[in-house]
Length: 164
Image (tube, rainbow, N blue to C red):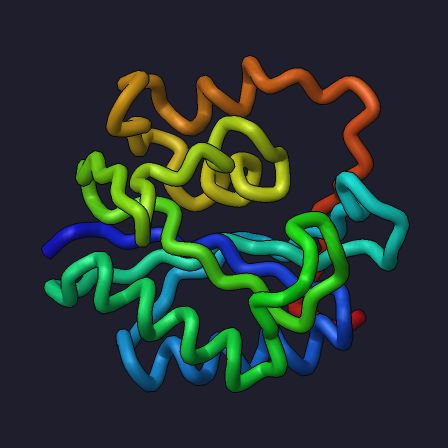
């Protein structure tokens, strides 16, 4: 079964929305492996810090069906699609990897370009899948994180669970 990785984040009542979303994901996909939680300054706009993490599971469910399920979970948590790209949100759950699948369509791009663009995706991914390899570059996530430009990075690993 393919390994599937999700990037999860929130900066509006993050503890409530993330914990509820994780329960929803476990109900649909079963056991999840979770990275640490990371507190990350808002990027591209002024707003509260985000809480981010990466989750891993295995499933035979096709990528477009998973993306549809994720969208439903986001909407259940008050996420609207009429907001700006860089804005506060109740919940953001993105399918970032589906095994070694490379896909670029109107509906979905895999692997997600955010993987090596944003620390809030790459650091937690490197934590739970350090030897995993990016399907396009072939580099390990550990190496991608080691090479990531961390200058000015406003991100920190939270200790313990999501007790904010």
